[in-house]
Image (tube, rainbow, N blue to C red; front, side, top):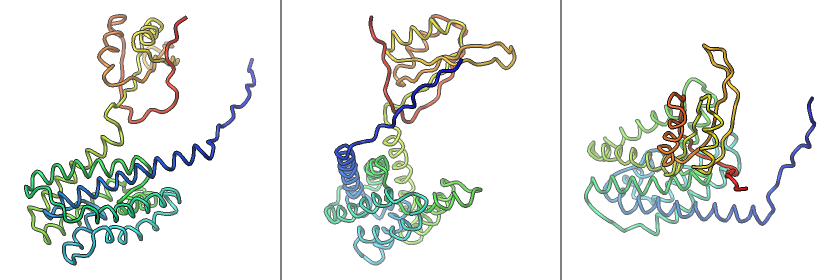
Length: 296
């Protein structure tokens, strides 16, 4: 017998909540733009080390013409941004325009500062700071790289090529151009910076406290579930599954825990069932209410 439940109402945010969310996003985008500008102006640009994408193109044009870097980044980004308008939405485009505008201002603030002439230090620390700034902007639904937005738009039309492959092709041309223009040693340092920045961006987007989703198959599922809820203070979900070979119905226990809790979870499971089947996966983002164990 089926029971008809009342359809849950969608909770809409108030104007005050939306305004607060917009203000915080604008603040983080601004902070990210200033951090990015600090990396470009104090580490990379003085040592002729470039980034990939539009920023890299702008830095090479600046090297030849001595035009304002921030203005170049903003102007070169505009055609890419509007080409991606239909695919990425007005909100993202507006926030991206804001981010590039703030970067243009920030580059002028830091212009003239020079931290070190050591190329290794410039490549490493420039990449770390650059990655943190760009990651902060991406985390708040904006971008500084028009080539990335263009790649997203093209990949949706050309199904046989991915965004990553398109970006790799674009950056291959950029770094080859940097080799001819700035010297091959600077091109190699630029690739090192790009690699470091990409890893830092991933860390910012995914979070340093990456979670793990865990699936456990055991005949002692009830005992294992109770132990996880008691010892790790996190909820579990039980799902019915069917064994492929045995054709027997089994219960799968599912939960999401912090990566630092994984050793304790494995010890709990193996202490109750040494033959338990455990599968873990990285979880880059977890949202929603975490249901905790409540005492009676």
